[in-house]
Image (cartoon, rainbow, N blue to C red):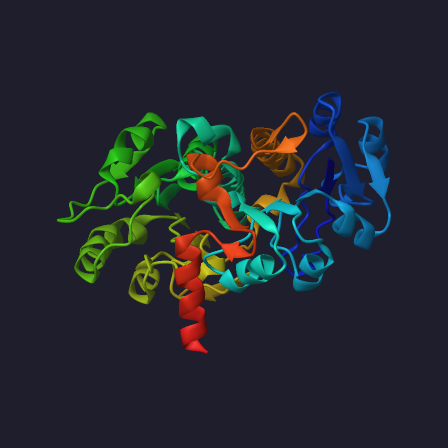
Length: 383
């Protein structure tokens, strides 16, 4: 069985990660798997062809050969149409697929009779924790968001006692206490900031407090937790109530980090124009939902904009800006899923298994995931 690692070509979003790193390749080779690596696949993440060869991989210089002859193709970013067209029928793709945001890609994979697994669909269970690429990459994003904010803020983060007087610590307000939010809290605290955090899920209060932050609680008269523990999209009444409570905390913050995203949908608006106008000049907002429309009014994906004296930063693909460790974590996630799927050199597809059933997007010419089918219907209806 040939396991192939593709070189990422998503230059528009600056994709620098690689699906497997040499250390993981060496372990898979020892288990009897044949690993192909497209020449230069690891260069952007500082892993050379020589390192892969030393790990036991075969370097493939022709992309068409790699895509066309691989049994299982491993990737980070969503594949392009011409890449999918190079895959042979019946082969397997494991990658981020954004199937709810780009369901037409899933249809193309189905048309090519590719068995495709979406890494963002790994269930949030203890059994699948080591495969959870969304969480591993969100942690990287949360960490880097705070570093970006600290670099942009015209103030110190920690309290300083100097001969020129005492400098008060920066105030950081994190909106959303998922993996990215919790890592942002932890990082801001390490840098010495005073941190507050908000999430519509009351169950995360203890996690926030355990990291040394104050939890801003909003009591809502509806369920706020969706399947898998993710935050659920709430009613307009609840959104209004939430905005009323958090407005004062946004106003007093030097830095606001927003992390709220809903798969396949526009990100909820958390920070309004009115809130921005009340913030102190020089304050910074880092919007991690920029690619989904943004949690903040005025966010522009990939750009820094200034509104009312407040710098709004809309980074895209933040995990790729730390490709060594982001690739290391992703490689662990994807290799664990790979080993779960391949037993004794054969692909085992038990769709009654919650991990396999949840993660498999297409198989045997069909889209298997009902939510992806519904998303595709919506795209077609809008045309």
